[in-house]
Amino acid sequence: MLSTGALRAHLLAARLAGTVATSREESLRSYRLFAARDPRVLIGIDPEWTWGQRDLIELMADKCGVSSDPRHTQGHDVIDPERTLVALDAFAERIRAAAQRGAPVLLGTGHPHRLLGFYAALADALSAAGCTVLTPAHGRCVDITTRFGLRTYNLDYVRGVALVRDPGASSPGRATGAHTHSPLPVRLALAAAAEADGVLPELVIGDHGWVCGAGQLGFEAIGLADTDDPALFVGEAEGVVSVVVPLDDAVRSDYYRPLTRYVLNRACLSQ
Image (cartoon, rainbow, N blue to C red; front, side, top):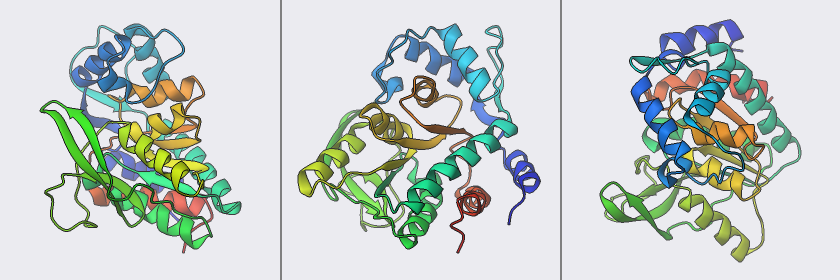
């Protein structure tokens, strides 16, 4: 079993925590946009409380360990590895509880190039434990507004994990797809699940709009988030999202493998 100390060392060495690649400028820009309720940054969350930029800085300092000083405007952000470890334990506990009761689950990612392997391992383990890994709306189209205008994507599943890909992309089922923050794919998937046979997920696992969109609709949702994604942490603070793990969500995909082993061990799902 991977020890807590070994994982902490890996988090720092891989820059999943500690000094991360995400810049302070990027994070502050996201906080400004969130405070202005820009849907590109809300990613499915409809905040009940009023969140100013200073409020968000304080929240992210508490949840992630970033600087709480609003005068700190440049450089790289910092994530406290202890906060990551505590959140990973809570994340694993939610997965363990779902596995124990054989709950239907839905997994989706807006970072398929980086995080698909992490979620796919969870899907495999949950399936082996008797959970139904849902794949609703497979192949359906979803229109998402991007910086290039309105784009149409197809919803696909790879090893039980949802992602969106360009309709012209070859080889459906391969581990390639589009980076997106949109909550529209999870809304499509949940609507299709309700229409098909009424089997809805008791737990949604993912990132970006997959977590925010599902949580806002009342589903238990857990996931990963970087320091420039305040929506998930706001959702957690307001009780809409159950667990958010602070870490850099865009490092090399193999750097997440120790996290996979740690979570599965903690969830008693190691194979």
